[in-house]
Length: 340
Ligand code: SF4
Image 1 (cartoon, rainbow, N blue to C red):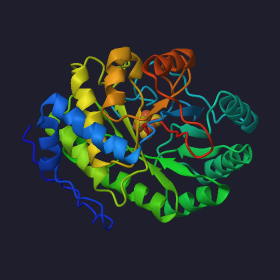
Image 2: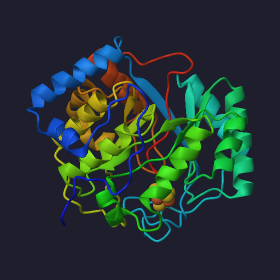
Image 3: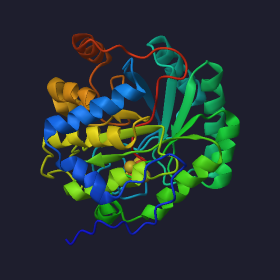
Image 4: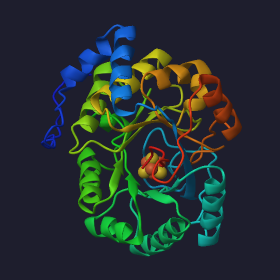
């Protein structure tokens, strides 16, 4: 495949004071000697987050499986035989119970994820009730429900939603290899609706899907040039689920994953860069390097939407081993897995 370093998607002008990143400039960061890259990332990280606490995120799947989309990494797509059984929207009382448990376990923000292409009107009304109930517990709220219209984004904002997760997934040039049921511009449109509704943005991608380094640079450039760049940037490491088209993809070198974290930190210095799906496969040593490279948020709990996550106990032990403090207090724990 011929890879252009020019994005086919027009980048919006960035806010005053925010640096514009070309794909080539981001690619040059990837090319730095490993120690130089981590040194620059550490400088950027410490300038923005001098105390260096790690944000802990809790995620609940409120509607699992049966999705009509064809995201090649996703076990929730109805067309792939992955053993994920479609479920209906969970009852409100179950969401409240899960949110209370998450709060008791130290989370201050709670994310609700649904495997939809886009929510229908009746779905939004139910999610609005969930958002209001979770908010009334004193938790910050986040949702990931697929594509949103402007009106839906506003409804969720009015119900008390703080964050919306919607990922770009990969570079525009590679996107068509991964998803064919919606286009890149659909994703940018949803992100625009979310911003205009006054919601904060959680937006990242997945690496290790067979993309090239320049395509990883392309993803980071897209994220960093959003105006403003997302408050939360989940970087997922592909979890190869049997039955999905990407199962069997050549695994990404773990050090390349660390490089991706470092480049995200340098280009989006004030964002929460989150280690999301795939953390279990990375092991403790690579996760420690990711923290050194500027990751300052993790998913916390035993399960993400459908894939396993290191147990909460093991996470606490790892943070303690590294001398890293979990962040506490309202407004500090983030949410959403990078899926919809
Ligand atoms: S990633 Fe989201 S939109 Fe894509 S198939 Fe999975 S649940 Fe559906």
